[in-house]
Amino acid sequence: MTDRLQTEKEKPGWAWAPFRHRIFRAMWIAQFVGNLGTYAQTVGAQWLMGDLGGSALEVALIQTASSLPVFLLVIPAGAFGDIFDRRRLLIVGQAIALAAAAALALVTLFDAASPALLLLLTALLAVGSSLSLPIFRAIQPELVPRDEVPDAAVLNGVSANLARTIGPAAGGLLIATIGTEANFALNALSFAAVIAVLIAWRRPKDKRSVVPEQLFDAIVAGARYARNSPAYLKLLLRTFAFLLCASALWSLLPVLARGPLELGPTGYGIALGAVGVGAVLGTTVVPKIRREYSENLAVAFGSSLFGAGLVVAGVVGVPAVAIVALAAVGFGWINVTSNLNATAQLLLPNWTRARGLAFMTVAYQGAYVVGSLLFGALAESVNVETAFAVAGAGALAGALAGLGPLALPDLRDVSPVRYWPDPDLAMEPEPGAGPVLVIVEWRIDRDRAAEFAEAMEPLGRARRQTGASRWSLFRDADDPALFLETFTVPNWSEHMRQHLERGIESDKELEAEARAFLTDDRQLRVRHLLSPNDG
Image (cartoon, rainbow, N blue to C red; front, side, top):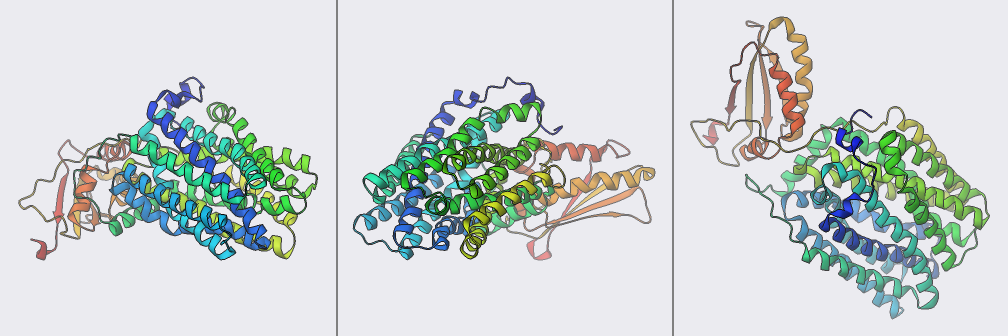
């Protein structure tokens, strides 16, 4: 793809390069330990629901309980991640999850568990995860250079999938030898390990030029950015479409294992482990495909392999063949998810990265919530084999769409830069004064008016992304060489964030392209209008 940074294309294909950075290495180990506990927890929760007499739908609801709280809370969590210290928020989120896992271990140990309590504590654990998910992703560009972010995303996929290889098998063994309470205790210990690493991390303090945003305003700003970013909306849609189909694997694999495949808890752990083995093997191929071809082809290939593997695993009925197919599913999974995550991290500027990734987490969890209900109901009303076949066919259809209307978006340079001069005003507005009407006068060659108007469209979108609630471009009927650009910002502090915190290199380039239409080198005339009551 022409959008990828040239430095990324030219660097040696060493996927392990991010491990050179001490902070990334320590965080990777911490997340691996956390992922190990999470997958052991998943095996324990789904198997315990079966032991408690839960139906196929109730087993699938474990996935819903894990996803719905994240779906509801992750956007406020992302806003918090852009307002407050990300390290401290991670510690709080992990502490909540630790408490939920420990409580689940205790109620299981004393035979006090019930389907309702299991779902409730699983949901509480997800509340802690909702604080952590977007922030863990948002800090990745802080840990490695920009051109190593795709490799870091792959290695984070290795962490999750290596844990998926070991965790389920260990979880199945713990169930068989000790009991499901051991799985939950292991998860609680894993959260403690993550907290220890986070406490030791000395993250530099954020430097903010303007007063901190309020939570509601921060959420609105993040939503405004996503709504006015067609590239990011396309990425979110593609993510949702893939994970809607992928939800069948994570929510119904225990049903397939207990039913048609006739596997016990250890066999179920091996089946989940096969997905992890395939994903780990895929990490050796993903960087090569990305550099020699494109992320888009890697995602299409991975989605095809994932879909075909789901169909085979669901309908063949032979455990050995199903396990091989699940390894292919894992291989496809890492190709898709690592490239989608890396694209999101590189597409979003730092000022809204946690919020933007929160919307991606909503796409993840929303797909899991809808998909687990949809495919769980299909398995209940027809059979689990049909659910797997339909989900696999959907992933194959998504691969075709990814080569056309859902192709991955072009990247742009989101490095922060201040390119607007400070306003030269006769009065100093209060931070809450507003709304603010900004008027920019552009005097251009009147014969190039159509070209200028076309060049201003992406610049107007950039204004809306960074804080403008409305944007318009007007031409003076008495003076056709004069254009007035107008945009409205909710308040003065939000406009100052546009000046001081939200500028990026690609937006600076868009303004430079528009300035090329000016008839002379005069500074643009910019006016700031406030309500009379704010004077």
